[in-house]
Amino acid sequence: MKRALLFFLAGLVVGELDPIGWVAWQVLEPHLPRVKEQSLAAPSPFEQMPPSTWIAESEHAYVLEDLYAPSAPVHLLVVPKARYTSVLEPAPEVLGEMLDLARSAARQQGIAESGFRIVINTNPQGAQTVYHLHMHVKGGRQLREPLLPYLWGRLTHRR
Image (cartoon, rainbow, N blue to C red; front, side, top):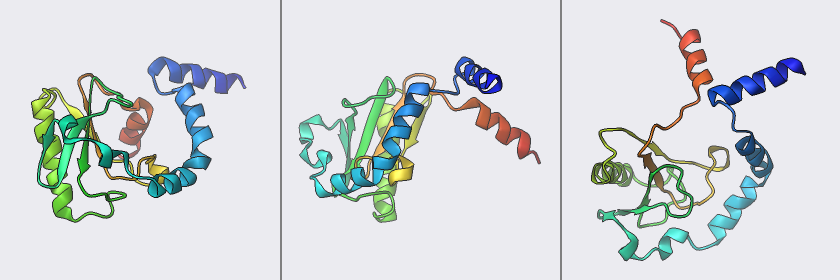
């Protein structure tokens, strides 16, 4: 028990553990298949976004700010105009266009040079909760990456 507590506290110190987030995902995980069913049965929230909220667009996609749950100072969503439920469905050309739009939006928002992250959640174990494909473009501050898995990977995969 003491060892577990020591590792937990060490994790908090180095920023590896998010106990509130961990508990939230433990509670949410069994419900994610039902979340998928409900999302697929409902209209996509992105289909109701008026073009006046878009900050950029291309032929098949658009960009808007994530005002619902931003997790970085700059948090954009790149959304295809047609509803694809995940990254597994659209043609490669649509995905390429979305990626180009993400890059140009990052430049437009001033985060291209300092750095940004593009995230696509796919299906329940990928933490997808909205089943209309979208890319998260996050930046504007140093984004944290779990340190211990990175270091462990470096130690165990030396060439």
